[in-house]
Length: 193
Image (tube, rainbow, N blue to C red):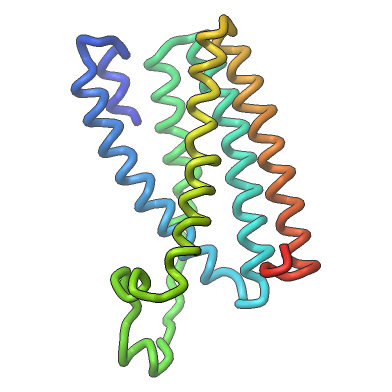
């Protein structure tokens, strides 16, 4: 993120900004997968359903704070201040990883004999419905959020107002849904929710 401060967000710098965002997206997705794996390790098997809801709730809270805060920061202080604040926040909130000790785990015999792979997952007969659910969630959850901001700016709202509406209200509703889902999964089980 900090490298984005070197370029103004204008058409003349579209190439470097786009390349930086692509690299950042790759790094963030790698981090997201690592956090998902860490979350799975942190919970016992019977805690994973509610734990997933708790993880999503905390991520939603982070979205609310960052979504509103970064747009407010941008509208008050500009591009460089916003991207530097985002880089600092990433550094601060990622720092606990440096102090985490990996636990030594012995894989079950079946896993050692045939390690899990993406291709093995894709060949499973239950992959199409799982993929459809994940695709649907991705379309709804990860597409609406950025598009809503653009539409609201186009409708005449200021960036600060968009930050409040999308960054806070939408993210807090997402937080409430994640919290309710965590409770429901703990109470009724994942397949019944």
